Amino acid sequence: MFVRWCITTIVGKVAATRIATQGWSPELFSTLISASGGAKILGIAHLDRFLFGDYLQRTDHPMGLYGSSIGSWRNAALASPSPLASLLRLQDLYLNQGWDEADPRSAGEIVDDLCEQVIAGYCDDALINHLCQHPRFTSHIVTARGLGLNNNRRGVALGTGMALSAMGNLLSRRLLGKGFQRVVFSSGPSVGFDFQDFNTVHVPLAAANLKGSLLASGSIPFLMSGQRDLPGAPKGQYWDGGVIDYHFDLENYVDEGLVLYPHFTDRVIKGWFDKGLRWRQNQSPLMDRIVLLAPSASYLARLPLNKIPDRGDFNKMSQSARYKYWSACVDASLELAESFDSIVSESNPMKNVTTIN
Image (cartoon, rainbow, N blue to C red; front, top):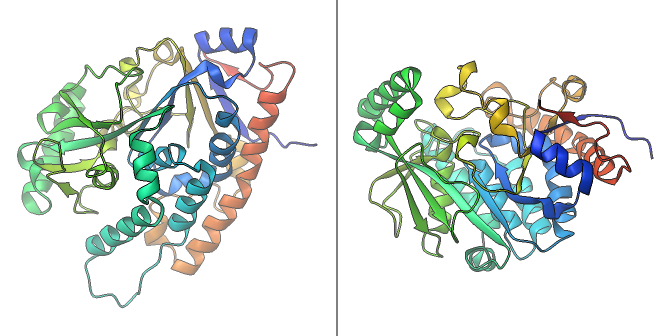
């Protein structure tokens, strides 16, 4: 079968050594990272389907699943009784989001409702019970609890708090801890990440807080209302986990196993406020155990708008145009899955792989 090359596969030094000698055995991976990104999940839809429904099902070894924002929603599908079916349902619900153009509610109220519909649509009782007690996958849903002015849902107070957080973060990432506390909802011990960079609270995942923590992890300040006073967690206002862990700070990774990172880009940015700060990307020494999969530049150039879907499409396109464009990107992503399948099936495991020195 001819496979048009369209995936960038980046491996760290330790990962390269192990894969070169042991091949692409899924047992090498003890951790899966799923980053913030909203609609970008549709840009790698078929890659996720291959990973969740095939590659990671070839073994039954334990894995820790770490996700922020939409990444936590993806991971919840993997930890369901039927991973591929749950993932397909999530992707379909996200793709088909729509609303009445004459709806008198505010944009924030509409977005809140749409996200609640997505979570309710695929996160049923069977998924909730299975995820919280999964024998193999330990789930870690990352949220950011607002402190001080960021403990407000909206208005001038929140705007001021966010502005102060952005300015403090520019000076030092640690100053972001003045405005936010990392709260991780976990179904078991955190083996992969030891979060030492910020004040971090671990809360047991349970049926009572799973949907709320998923919604909180994806609650973008200003655009959404966030979640408040989640069961079992410190009281307060909960925001998108990507505020602190946009793509995760890999300096916190402590496990000996490799990290599988199906991503939307070859950049790994620590926090939401770091997107414009090139020096806040994870540097090579932190990537030693990482295997990052992302659409290549040549692949993106073939897409209808030369990019994968993103949140900005909601404002730039009509609902029908957005659905058509997003559907085309979902269909095209089959090439990503085929490319990675070819890599893991290749007799030379390092063929078409980029190693970080």
